[in-house]
Every structure is written in C-alpha cells, then in structure tokens.
Image 1 (spheres, rainbow over the protein chains, first blue to last red):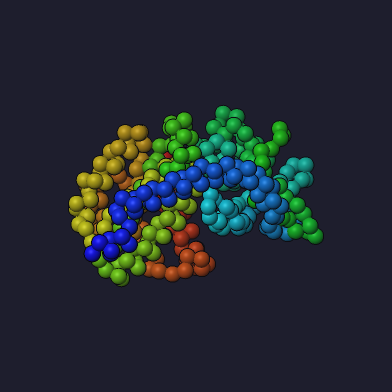
Image 2: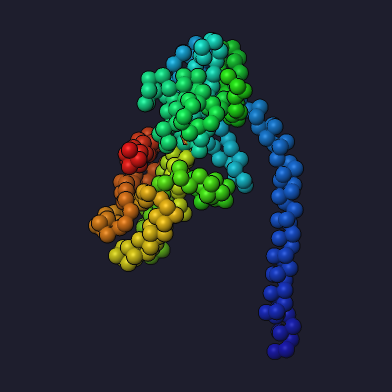
Length: 169
Length: 153
Ligand code: FES
C-alpha cells in the first residue's frame, strides 16, 4: 500500500507542477509581444512587395471601375485570405488612380455614383467625395480616399495590398 | 465595429455616429449528431455574414458577441434573456437593434422580441469557397445591408 503511494503524484505536488507550468508560460507571454513588435515592421516591409494583378491597362477608363482582388493577410496568429476592393480610373490629369473604397470617416464602404452621378458616396453618414476621391467639405470625411500603390508592367496593372493617404491634391 | 478593444475605444469616442447594433442568434446542439452537423455549419455561415456586414458598414454598425443557446431548449425561455440584452444595448444608446438568425423558431416569437428580427434562409451545407455558394451569400448580404440602410432613412 505505502509503496504504491510513493509512486503517485500527490494532489499538492500536481498543483505545484501545473502552477510552475503556467508561470513559465506567462513569462513567455510577456516576452513574446516584445519580440513581435521588434520583428513586425520587417515582416510588413517584405509584404508590401506583393503586387497583385487586377486588370489590363487598356480596360481603364475615366469612369471609376470597381475591381476586387485577394490577398493573404496575417491577422495576429493566423493567416487568412481577404478580399480587397479598389476603384480604378484615369484622373483629370490622365494619371491612373487606384482608390480604396474605405471611407476616411469611420470606415464604411463607399460606392461610386449611387447618390450623385459623379461622386463617391458613403451610406453611413452621407459622406461625399468628388470624382477624384477628394472629400467634399461639410460632410463627415476629413480627408480624401486613400490610394493603393500600383505598378504597370507589360500593359497590366498590379496593386499593392497596402494603401496610403494622399498628399494634398 | 466589433467587440475588440481597438474598436471599442473608437466606439466610445464616436458614439454619436454608431447607432445600429447587430446581434447574431446562434444555436448549437449536443443532443443529436445530425443537429450538430447542421448547427455547426450555420454557425460558420453566420460568422461569414456578420463579418462581411460589419466590414461594409463598419462606421455605423456595431457587431456584438454572438448570443448562443442550445438548439433543443425552448425558445420561449430565451425571450426574457435576449430582451434583457437588447434593453442594455439600447441604453448605450443604440437606435436600432438587429438580430440575425437562421433559426426558424424565433419567427413565432418575433412580436415579443424588442429588437428587429432578421430571419435568413440558410443554405443547407456546402463548400463556402465554391463560386455558386459565394454568389448566394453575396446577394443575401446585400439584402440585409439594404434592410439596415432603410432603417437609417
Ligand atoms: S463612415 Fe463614411 S461618412 Fe461616416
């Protein structure tokens, strides 16, 4: 009887083991985020190089066209495919613009020519942007729609998944 | 907006703009294998719908955590609990509370629920990646979006 007992882990011992285990794990958790912060900018820098083909240049018109494309997105721990949208068109200078449909107010999705013929409109708080994607004064958005970085190769338009604010137009 | 720290902080600052709450009603089953298959699929589906909606109307709607209950429990017993949640949500304040569900049982009770019940016919099962399924889902999401926007005008 007493022999058997020696081989068993007592309840108290077991608790001790597990608690140390948890402690160790928590220690790791404290360190992990710091490593994450240090590594993250590097990872991001690499990712921004992933251009995705969206359409041929000769399909681009002066009227904004909605295109969608899929990108891999790392969200915290897991990776997933997300669908991104862009409005692609020639601006009044004849340059290509690829605008993000994400409203600069609080992030709803804007649409082209739903409310007024030549404006982008946000259904959430009636945000409006002109044909070049510049916000119209007196509506909630405070800056123009953001822009995708793009490149053209052999007549094909490629977008980078990341968007950036536009310098004063 | 979603129930994550980052969005909550934004919500607290911008409450006047975010006036519409979405609560998914999602049953789960343990008592029966077949029901488990069905409800788990619907759970995935609801996840997809609610997140898509949230993404499209992020600036004005707030997606609350899913309201769960056992599939074989009596819906009548859930009414009080869901109404309590709705009352709390409205106090925040939210003008509109939409409840999304695939579960038919709620329809009989819709008059005693203090929010707007949106019942959706669920596709039976299938590959969520396939193009036809995606099309069905896309068009249903647009319908719900229209419904929500109507409440704003
Ligand atoms: S989110 Fe677009 S106007 Fe407010």
